[in-house]
Amino acid sequence: MLHAVPGWRLIRGYRREWLGKDVLAGVVLTTLLVPQGMAYAELAGLPPITGLYTTIMCLLGYAAMGPSRILVLGPDSSLGPMIAATVLPLLGAGGDPARAVALASVLAILVAVIMTVAAVAKLGFIADLLSKPTMLGYMNGLALTILVGQLPKLFGFSTDADGLVAEIGAFAQGVSQGETVAAAAAVGVVGIALVLALQRWLPKVPAIMVMVVLAILATSVFDLAARGVSLVGVLPKGFPPLTIPQIERGDIPLLVGGAIGIATISLADTISTASAFAARAGEEVHGNQEMVGIGVANFAAGLFQGFPVSTSGSRTAVAERSGARTQLTGVVGALLIIMMIVFLPGLLRNLPQPALAAVVITASLSLADIPGTTRLWRQRKVEFGLSMAAFLGVALLGVLPGIAIAIALSILNVFRRAWLPYETVLGKVEGVEGYHDVRSYPDALRLPGLAIYRFDAPLFFANAKTFRDEVRSLARTEPHPRWVVVAAEPITDVDTTAADVLLDLDQELDEAGICLVFAELKDPVRRKVDRYGLTRQIEPRHFFPTIGAAVAAFQAETGEEWSRSTVGDVAPGAR
View 1 (spheres, rainbow, N blue to C red):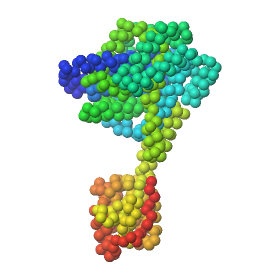
View 2 (view 1 turned 120 degrees about the vertical axis):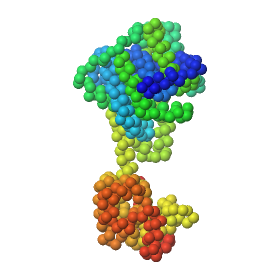
View 3 (view 1 turned 90 degrees about the horizontal axis):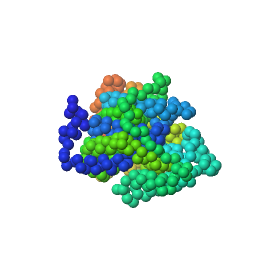
């Protein structure tokens, strides 16, 4: 049983030469973990210290059960708004911070349960429900939502607005009414510029830590507190005890809904990040074990006043560049944070709040992918539309409805492609083996009286009538074909509704003196067709193993030869 635990396998196989690199990488990583953990806690509407508690426990939990050698989990900018959108409505006006922490902790435990159940049931494919275009739109909308939500904090004031449009209006109103604290705005704007500049031109320098240190120094040098700049203050000393969060029973339904959305985003993010880093190292990604690792990390965080976590691509990249070899890097980071809150809780007391806003805003900018969106516009307008719909869903309706819209759009796009698949007529091209799309080869030869039709999708209840209508259209072309051969290799399934439609279509064509013929029907599909009784209703001689065999049979019966005089010169409409 111990051998099945990734952390135990790591201990058994650990090499002494890795130790120095892991410890150094852990020290470097901590400089990023502390400010980001605090900033993302505030993004989630929680006290900054909970970000450190969360970081500690998720690092230790994933080190024990996570399969990846260097993946770094922690509070994440993409989850912060989702946590806030789930927890804040349950608090009401003037909510108790302790209750907010309890709700967030239960949310983390629910995410852990969902992840574990999904791993046992091998439901890792759920992450694939978010297509790249819809995920792109969701992340762009999330980036805009985060950025706008942090602007008041960056400028030294606060608003009570809820929703993107309302927040934009409240921010503009606050600025116009002179609520901006000039010193706060200077710290925030300069902090953003510094982080972006260092990340652009000196990527090996820990940009966020440099900005944080300079902001703390600026507090002392320019007496920023006296100029109206809010500071983080002294953090609570010590590590929290094991805590079973207490909430009301009526809170559970909304928390479950939020947990499902968070688990979906966290899983998709983790699988994509793990795949990218595993490919560099020549390793494989174990999706179900990753879900267990994420689940344990969230469960550990939930028992120590933490909140839901996900993988961080930026922190993982920092660990990799710093020479990390194993999860000991994360353990070192967790131990250093524990030492800080136990022995030096006042270390960050002079950190300006606008500096934390700058951390969040720079993270939000990394979520957005404008070049990817413009590429969709150039390459495929339909997927660009899906991306924009997901973007508007997040921006106008909120984060949780946005993720639901993104998933729904991805599923509908799959359904649309199956409902209206590509379909065409095939012909024979001189000098090229086989039978080919007449759109690609307009000069293809065709046999008078024969139409070879290809439908690139499984036949089921939603598209069976589309198939029937296109075959009818071919049958009505002048001169009428005597055979309509269905090139059936792309048809990977036939359900009972489609079987009934095929039977009616065969009878209809028979009455018109046209034979409906099938070629290259896959064996599993042929067995289903046999089970439905179609091979007893449709003449057995109308099923052929290849298109060539069907063509040869037609030529033997009619004596026709290939020519450029065509049946059905216009192929069915492409979709």
